[in-house]
Image 1 (cartoon, rainbow, N blue to C red):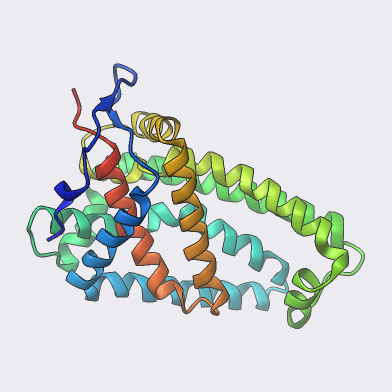
Image 2: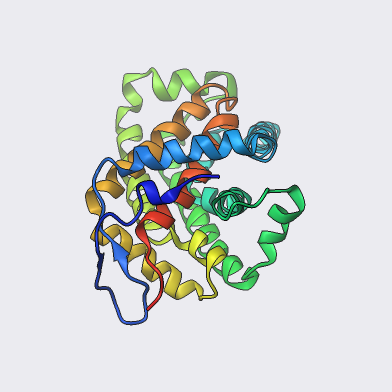
Length: 268
């Protein structure tokens, strides 16, 4: 069981909109404490945690193989980046595992899978929002790729060399990074605590997204640090041939639950 009281609620909740729960303002060191609590959750429930990690690895392999077979290898990079947009939705079982550990209960696969049914319509609603964001990003990424590579698209076996180790692709990388960062920042602001909130409380998707945006607004520096760590751990998981996702995905998932519990107070 993870003792959240050791680092939660050290500051008074700030005033937010009347229909939102209170938001706590925290220090910039907080993301490291969330990761520490996440590691303890992983050690307390390794079967579930690393099971989710294994699913992330297998899913990544299947997506890469499918895109390669369809001669759409150029979408591997944006799809990999897009994983971070849908990650909060895939991590519901990890949030539930951390919630059960916090309550002193033993997580089981049945309990974790049942979590998807709790407040299911609202979670599906934000899932739709995240899916639309992913589709928008893929569309934009396709247009950017066509703009820079329409004359000679790289083959699958040349993809890494052409994109990452060629001076001519620097404008492409800069454009894609800037556009992707803007989309990711918008999604992060509405999703960073929204799905854990929907899992934990009987509320609606609009309140959850507004609460998430308020969390980012009141904690801009810690949230920048947390977003950087999420991107860093996810990127590290991907550059290892996706094998590192077996560790990165459950670690980020559990930490996201502790982020929510640390930043969102009880409803008035």
